[in-house]
Length: 122
Image 1: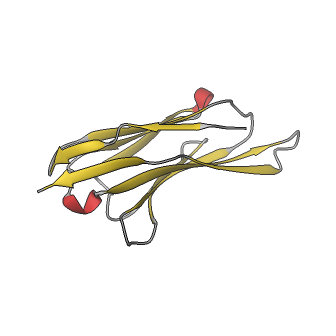
Image 2: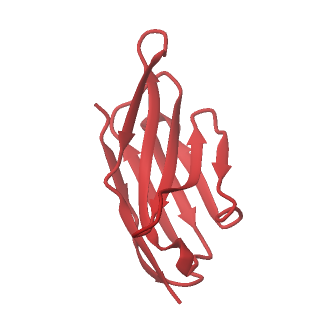
Image 3: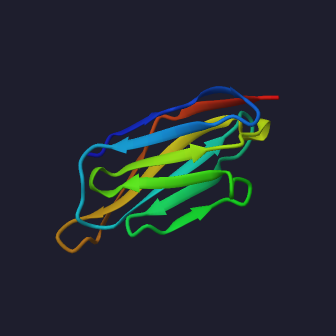
């Protein structure tokens, strides 16, 4: 069982920076995808960014150019560097890990973190 430890949230002024961390216990020889989502109260969950084991990254248009996702492959640890934060970035940020296991890397496993709060004030 993979356990996710999320950290780095906090309260900052607009234009400030935060770095979120998603650290997963265990490891796998197979591929995985780590995704950050965010959700503000009363709003739907929103995709923020993801990174794949091979280094492929994707960003939502709303954060492109401001956020950078990176990883430590051996430990399945992912960082989300958040710069030039805006009030609309305020949300609970959740980390999700989709990984594959089994001898043929064919068994999927999906894990969610508990979330870390990001609050950006004007």
